[in-house]
Structure formats: structure tokens, C-alpha cells
Image (cartoon, rainbow, N blue to C red):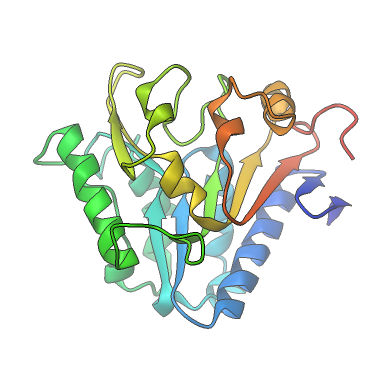
Length: 245
């Protein structure tokens, strides 16, 4: 299935093969964990294909849904039933089709409050799940964090030039004025607190940014992700940097 099999970077011939591999990888990690398993989800078209795989009986019958908890790395500040909601996308593509306990789904709140209140509320949710207001390297917040990379090098809703890039204490922040709608994003301290962080990238339009991020270009928000665990890049052939092995 893979063209390249290295410790951190895998290249697939197609996005479909990438999605199936990551579904298998995620399923294997969850089964092996033996306890509570936490996943931080991403928005975007590539994760959508992955989530569709998770709803497939091949994987849905194996995932230990009762002990897997689902979080989001960022969210548009729109109602949960809005077409642009990351929560809605995940719900429609897999969470509403599998036996996941409702209490295991931790959506970012977006209604009846300001963006700043939303970020604060989600930080509280994360701390309650973690059981402490201080994260340690010995006990990551997430088992797996899924991320994408934008055409400007952003990841989650950490955009170039924003104050959120400098945040070292808050776990979640409101991002206002960058896009048409406010965003809520996890910060680096929260995203980095993961046993495995996986960037998913497909399509030729992502090739340059993937190459720059993987080479360590610190002008790109995606390149500043430094998990306490393992960092993976899963790309299709079109998004793989020229000469990547």
C-alpha cells in the first residue's frame, strides 16, 4: 500500500490509500492502548476521506468506541449544524454512524457565547478530561492529533503573524480577523501534548508547503509543531516534496 515506509514519513500513491492506511494505523493504536484513548481531529477534505473510512464496517467493527474520546484542534465559530462546521463534518462522515457514546464526543462550543468564552470553555473541557490544569511530558493530553497544512502554512487555526503563535500558557484561543468568521484553535502547548501527531496532506497544491514545513521553515505555523511524542507526515504522491524518499 505504501510507496515509502520510514519512521516518520509515508508517501502513498493515492489519497484513498493514504486514508485507508491512516484508518488502520489509528485503529491499531487505539486497540493497543488498552485504556482511554484520545484523538484530536482536523477539518478539511483529506480528513473527510479518513473519517469515511472509520465508518466502514472494516474499521468500525474493530475500534473500541466506548473508550475513545474525540476532540477538535480547531473550529469555525458557527453553529454546529452550519455547513462549515468541523464538528458537523465529523458527525456526518463517521460519528453518527458508529456506536460512540455521546459523552465521548467533545465538540468546541460555538453558540450562546463569545469566541473568547468559547475558547475558555473548551480549555476547561480539556483540563477536566486531562484531570489537571498543568500538562506533563510523561502524560500527553492526546494519544493522536491529526493536522492539515494550508496554502499559507497554517495548521489548525494557527495562522501566520497571529498572537496565538506565541501563546505558551493557554490551551485554546479565539482567532479573530483572519478569516470571515472567528475561529477557535488549540495552541501549540495543547497540540504538542500528543503521543503521535500526524500531518495529512494530499494534492499538488500542498507540495511546496509540505516541503518547507518538513525542512523546518519556522516562518510557517505548521513547522512549529513539536510534539512530545512522534511526528508523522502522511502524504500522497502529488503532495510529496520533489525527491522525497
